[in-house]
Image (cartoon, rainbow, N blue to C red; front, side, top):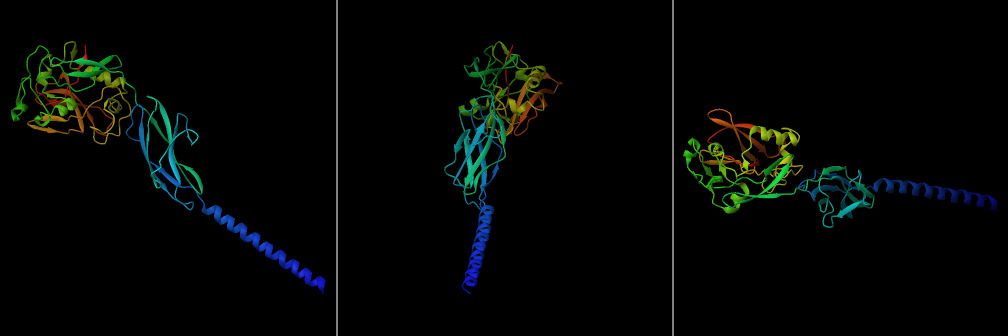
Length: 332
């Protein structure tokens, strides 16, 4: 009888142990399933320069809880990890806002955002950038004493700023016309955007000239000229053609351009969106850069080159000679 009781007790004990082990395995399994790393959505990098870039991300908590750490890592090799260069975001746990500085110019980098919670570490999809060129600028002074940056692009040397002289290179003043008769002139004239006298605005955006001022052949400093259509085509072809060159010509960032996400490369040209002038109204500041060529099309019009916000295409446009457009000078 005693042996029978001991045997039943032993069987019961084994059953209890088995149930405990089974429950523990199920509990462990549930815990292992529930503890998951965060989910990260990385957005396209922006504000790219020759040494820096910005990037944002959204971090979604899963059963591992909110992220206790997040950051961005980068490398010149694909799939960077926290073992590479890393910046922490110590202020946000459901999002990330990162600015990377100290990058090398004209270099390809790979970026990934990471986040850590109780479920472990997670990495976002990879983004690839190429930092902009570090341009070496020279200087040029016009007859009015205005100083301009210049840059060599291919075999050409271009002004890196819009012309703002008030005189031809022989010292003759260029008439300043502010009223609606501007559009009907057949002689050279100049004006500012909306006839402003603000020195900072003029320095940034330059001055508008009609094509008749261009056609005097005296608008640019001595030793420089308003580029022909062929000169512009040479520039565009050097930078990859009409369909690709615009991002390489525009000033990087959105300080002056609207939605300037297409800028990918500094050529040194730094096109500024000064817009244009017709009749007495100025238009499209921030959205367009319109620059004369010296090439005539017919009695009424001449050719100009146009860059648009958020567009990689260089537009070759016919424009009425009485229009007010920007001018970039090219070294002879």
